[in-house]
Every structure is written in structure tokens, then in C-alpha cells.
Length: 479
Image (cartoon, rainbow, N blue to C red; front, side, top):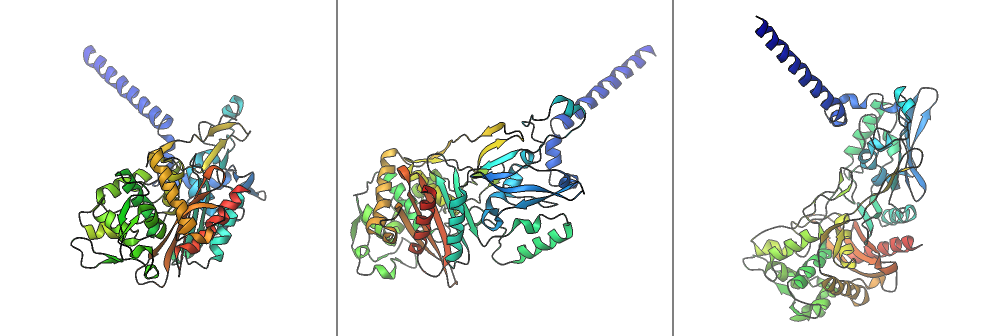
């Protein structure tokens, strides 16, 4: 009997210890994860009783909390929100987005790195104040970009500007946009109706066109194909086939140059690579994608710039993945290599392509947060620029950079010749059964060619019509 009782006590003790260990693990290590679980509705209780810290950029408050009378509650407020909502996102009674979501625990004071509450306050249960999120965005350039996109008459439009050497996102503008103040009130029913209204709009203003939607990039993708050709052994002066028409093996239909090219350089049977790129000869790049260097080479080069990956720009804040079709059908590869067909990209991705070229072939990880600070101003974390990919050797990158300069000096981008845009690439993507095109321009400029820009406007016309917007953005960044 004594032996049985002893065994029972041992088993009971072990079970109690196991239970205590599990409780400690759940409360100490899994608590935050469980609180943040989308299925946990309790995470939204009393969230408006927290005075969240501000989101700032260029010394300007973009988002902050405002006390509502003597109710003990706070409402989130946003400055110039139509312009800055792609950066701040919104904070409603039941959800949040963009930096409001990515840095939620810094803003609400629950991040373990915030140590501004002293020991006595902790014993008394006093809450740690919310910290500050400093965004990388240049406020002036963001405003300039948004105004230029709005005035372009485009149905949808976006612009991204990067510091090519660090990856810092300096501009991330999108239209149509929305006012985050309209969904940040304390009345859940009103917020729900506003969300319903915004989601019903056909152009989806809640979706950031700069990172969350993909578009056919048109001839700007020829930068990737030209890079693949350089990687395969050609140089900017190498002869490449051109001609008015090219029919890929097994294709039922030929690919032609733009009607405006008839009688021009693209009609010639052979051109230098730099001239074909400057004049944007479809036949050259369709042939490259279909046959030489071929689909695998172009696909690998695209991946070297970041295609196929969801690009993370803040904690959990990721772009849609850009893509180029991996296929053994030359006709599909040819179409994809002129930025049509199954090839799609975000404006962020195409800014990364330009940035990789001007940064010696090194594609930097884009990031949206420069610093995180405690409520007392102490630095919690600072951005640490890092390389994401290596797309080209420095020698090949220099050649690609020269080719982009040729576009502006003597090619399809002469509309910005003599401006702050040093080099670039135009692109016009047909949208099936639509009276508009996706008009693209990617380029670079500024001190030491530091700024890489991508602009997409959806309207009738050609890519060169987006180029002056890029010039305005680079001008604003340089001021």
C-alpha cells in the first residue's frame, strides 16, 4: 500500500510540474502570439483605451492618438491621409494595416524592447507608453508624387522611389487612395459601413497599388532581359537581331514592333544591344526570351532582381510577388520578355530593378522603417541596410546603366532629356479589352545616381508620359 501511495504522489507531482511548465510556456513565450492570433477576438477589446505612439516621417507626425473627452478612450488621427495611407495604413476598432499593423507592439507599448516603465510602475501595473515609429519616407517627395499621379488623369497609378544604396523607401504613393480617419472612429458599425463602401469601389482604394497589386510592366521588363543577355556574355555593343517582325518557334502569330517604329532603327535586321534597348525593339527582346539566352536565363535574371518573392518592407508587411513565366513554350516566353502575357510586377519591384542597376548590380532589401523609439526618445532599433540579391556584376551593371542613359539621350525617353532623370526605360503594356494602357517609366537620378524610381499610370497613351512624374519625384528628393 505504501509503495502504491508513493507512486501516486510521484505521478501527481510530475503532472503538476508539467502543468506549471506548460502554463509558464504559454504565458511567458506564447502569450503575444496567442493575443495576435486572427481567431482571437479578445485582442480587439479595449484597444481604444490605449494611447498609441505616433508614426512620423521627415519630422512630421503622420499618425497619432487623440483623447476623446473624459471617456478614457483615444481615437487615431491621420494627417493628409490620402497621401500617406500607403505608409501609415489604418487602425480601426477591429483591424489595422501597413505600419499600424507591422509595428503594432511598438505603437501600443507591448513590445518587450520598450523599457521606459520603471520597476515600481511595473509592480503597480502601470502600462508602458507606446513608442514612436520613424518612417523612411520623404514627406515632400511623397506629396509631389501623389499630386502628380492624381493630375495625370490615370484611373490607377503608383510611384515608388528608393535610395538605391540602402534600400530605404523614400516614396510609396498610390491612387486612388482613401482617408484613414474615416475608418478609425470608435463606432464599430460606422467603421464597418465605411469599409464596406471602400471595398465595393471597383478600383479598390484600400489596396496599395505600389506594393499590393501587380501590372504587366511592358518594355521596362526589357531591362531584365537585357541584363540576362549581358550575363550570358554579350556587351552593350554586341550585335543583336531586330527586324520588323519575329515569329517564335511553334507560335501561331508573330510579334511586331510598335507601329510608330516602322521605318526606324528597329526595322533593321541587326542593331547593337544598346541601340535596340534605347529604341525598345520588341523583336529583339522577344527573340532573346524565346531563344537566346532563352527562358531559363531570363527567369534566373528576374529572380536575381527579386521576382517570384513577396518582398518584406516592414515586419510582416509584404508586397505581392512579381512573376515571369517559367515555360518551355517559346511563344509564351517571347511575350513575357516584352513585359506582356504572364509577366506582372509591382511598382516596388520595378524600382528595385532600376536600383540594382545603379547600385553596381546589388539589389538592396527595401525597408520602410528608419528607427523605432521608446516614449522617452530612446532608440529601440535602427535600420540596418542589407543586400537582398546580386543581379549583375559591377561591370555588367555599368553597361546596363549606360544603356538606360541611352534611352533618355536618344531613345524612347527623350521627353526627360536634360532633367534630373539621368537614365531610364519606358514601357507601355496593352490591357486586353480596355481603352487604356499601363504606362511605365523606371529610372534613376540625383546625387551619385542615388535615387531609383518607378512610375505606373493607367491611362491612354505611352510610357513616356509617366517619365516627367519620375523627374518631379527626383527633383523633390534632391531639394
